[in-house]
Image (cartoon, rainbow, N blue to C red):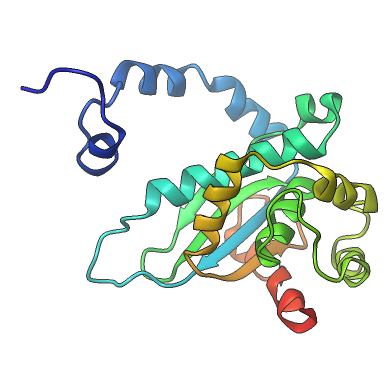
Length: 208
């Protein structure tokens, strides 16, 4: 039997010292977030990472998932007004393609475009985005006025905490192959939504 202070290493790798009561208590108390999702107009964010070897488990699952979800939250906190932050919804995971490296998330368009743009350009909050004029033109062409120039300016003016910067760098090191956002909202049929995906990384690769 193990006693003493919980060790994150063992919790991550072997499941030792998981706080089950807190974990399931948070889930069972989250009905409001399910209702929030049902009231949101969400789009599909698809991030394709370098394919993981099929003979191994997804060793990086928790690290990737929690970093994407946490970065999405922090991006909202640093790049939105207090009122906008209070009304904005969180990011929800939809599915993970086991051998393809594809991770699907659902969130509100304005926020996932900002997240997707930063990952496509391999940037962290506070860094200058590549080819900003072309980026805005591209976004307007495919998504209308979902993101304003002020959003990008807020992104570049924000100060990134060191721990967040380190985590996002490690996320990018997983090999971001594509970052796609759906042109149409998700309304329950993933195949219809997939047909409208736009790859933000293609623009970055062409204009670096």
